[in-house]
Amino acid sequence: MNLIFLGPPGAGKGTQARLLQARRGIPQVSTGDILREAIARETELGRKAREYVERGDLVPDEVMVGIIVERLAKPDTQEGFILDGFPRTVAQAQALEELLASLGRRITAVIYFDLPEEKIVQRLSGRLICARCGAIYHVDHHPPRKPETCDLCGGPLYRRSDDLPEVVRKRLQVYREETEPLVAFYRKRELLHVLDASQGVEALYQSILRIAGASSGNEEGEAEARADR
Ligand code: AMP
Image (cartoon, rainbow, N blue to C red):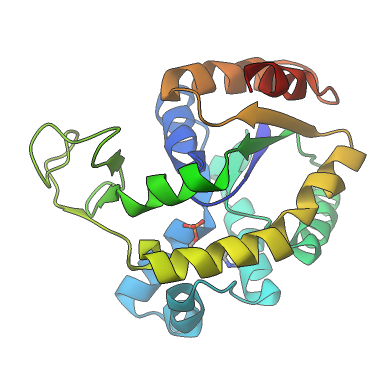
């Protein structure tokens, strides 16, 4: 099961990827998490990426493709992976296509998390992340049982610095300009499945499982999403 999770920031890609990893053992490859960890550890990658991430800009394609080449060479991704936050540009998508072809592998499905802009802003402005295990919460929609404390591991919760309103505006602009063209890219390849990302976590998870279990090349999710609107 080789999946790509595509969609705006805050649409629930990370939450769903973490669920699939926990329940099905498919590794989540989150380029945002990889970069944040590198920045926190002040590695060479972290030093290269910091200013882009803080501004809400994209880290250059060659850096990102390098990360993915390295990550997909690791044995845990041989049975499947979930790309969460990659590709984010057409150049990255093309590089991924070449990489997978050279490995004799292919994408099973691209799942597009469709969410209106006002909901994105609402979700990001209340998002809380566990500093220890990465679990994702929301102050109103999914609050932790104990304030500022992770239900799962007891770690402290924090707000991502790029979830501040001025950076969110920039991230959304970058998303529209650089990443949204991937919808057409993957639709052309008959890999795209559009899901209504405003449904609940569990309902969305079940829709993803249905798609991932189905053969590639249909857009049944698209009809579902339209019907839900
Ligand atoms: P995310 O956690 O996916 O929202 O990513 C956080 C930030 O990391 C983004 O705003 C970008 O600055 C950077 N980033 C993550 N993935 C990529 C990517 N595939 N290409 C370029 N920059 C990325």
